[in-house]
Image (cartoon, rainbow, N blue to C red; front, side):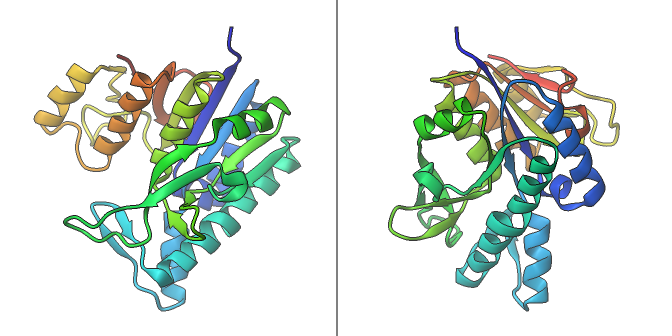
Length: 257
């Protein structure tokens, strides 16, 4: 029987503001058992880029990463945000290690090919070294993953944090009974975007298709849910979408086959 592993993905807003970061660190450190954290950091990257006179360009919520922007996201994601989280967890007795995909070669990507849009230095995950991550976890080390990968040719690539969480969960499902929890500002996937209590408790592929067709689920929630269903199909036991303040409370939207 496999040991349980909980993978938490938190958005940038949660880890970039002191109050929400401190609550996250409290809740995450209190979680029993094996765990891994994946974080974003986009708002900090946008703010610091602006301070440096670098314009942030977004298409459908995805950052266009030119050479100068890549320098900023590498500094912010792999440095400022990641190390603040690691230091905070260490202070709470959690033996965390901050990782980009380049560290220990844990996540290798390929630069996204140019189709309709040139995203620049953005990576699509090709391989996760689940054995290396499992070895850390079995030593009671908690990986904290920044949304950066590499191509094996010396280039860092900006990589979507939801995708990193999903691909890491899939890879580690060979070793663990994995629950993947996507945390964001709402209590779950909402039936009515203006009603924070209208959480859809369970989503199947059929319901997902229906809600997309009628416009209930749209924009950035669509790729998040596509990642979720892909993870379930690949062997992840359970995917939950909930608020960061509800970690460990079994609330939110549960994704099922």
